Image: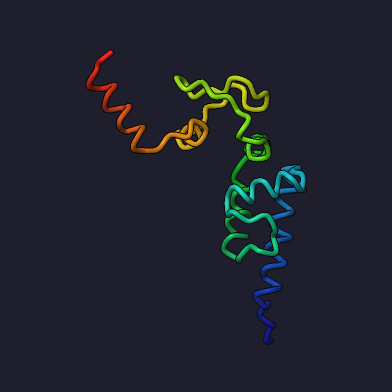
Amino acid sequence: DKRKQPTPEERKQKGIRSMYAVAKAEKKLSEDEIKALMKAEVKKDSTKDLTLDELGKMYRYFRDHSAEELKETAKAHMSKPEVIDVDPETGEVVDKESFKGRQLSEEEINKLLDITDEELDREIREAMEGGE
């Protein structure tokens, strides 16, 4: 019997349904959390704009992370980073409730401190040459 191959559009719809099944039903994520995570992972905020590969990536991302991790990450992406106050010594966030105690990545810290790689390299070199 000749089974009809699904069209790319049908495959995409199925992918979207699968992704939402994991994200919403299993992980209990809100629409906003899903959007924030898609934006962070594949730089798109609508499932309509996702390719099949990106849908697969998001499906696996939702499947492979705990609901807690996903919610935490979404919350971080949904906050306004420009109001975060970071201790430049430790990279620890000092004021924003939702970020308390979370270690920021070097990239995030640099963005917040608005420092270029060259400036950073120079500071590191000077610190190493100058000892303590």
